[in-house]
Length: 387
Image (cartoon, rainbow, N blue to C red; front, top):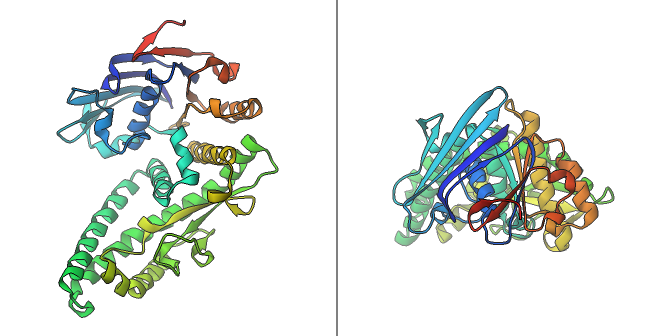
């Protein structure tokens, strides 16, 4: 999978820009704040329907404008796909494939990318929500139908929480909450499918994470992944992570449903007191281990950076292994500046085999020469000639 052309209108600081790209490495060079990251953010949006830098789509629309357009020509084998997203300020977003309208949520079916950026350090050091989002975005790229399952789960979760809040406010007793059991059944059905899919993904990711981390940081370091499941937890809070609730093996939805049902029954009183749902995939975590210790809290800055990068490289490896459309486009946003010379060389080795790699950097000398064959210079939201 190769992006041969990217076109933006009113996206971030770009009024209008067209960029031709090639197979292999493409390097965007520019000082901070000039717009190089905006280019790769736009491509990341096409495959995840989200920005890696902002929680709101509106942040990507140029100031004073009502809409932004991202358009990419993607070569997949011997066929070409024109993917387009229109991000609107006051109306629903729109999407097209080859000039024909599609549902926006279906865009990831046509374009796949994996983006690593400095913000991804939060995968290691941040809260569980970021790690859940990482897994779920990868799940959708891996199996687009999971987008619908997650949307259904979120809808049921909101309805169930509304009922719990109402019950708390009115002082209703458990015996008066027959409707809650209906929402329980749906929550368990959708939630069990998500937990099963995540467990399979984590099992598939684990060896690739270990391999990628060893490639970047050295073979003497061991990185691993385990699931933390709230339906098995002895605590109703996210912390601490208890070993009873951690799982390494692949899980089966039918068995998950039994544990899920038991957790809801066990937590019913606490849920009524708090007015929220206390167990389910929305409260799970991905526990990152480094040399037998939790990476969160123990890993140094360099180790955390390498672990986050290993997660993204492993994600790209899983997708390329399973895809019928070729490799995902691998995007490395401002990565090399954080690495010493030996790790830069090892990272260059790790990405060398991907069909297309997009790299941003402020300083050309930070990037190994073999990744600098096609250089695009950016200044103030415009493509410029080489200085």
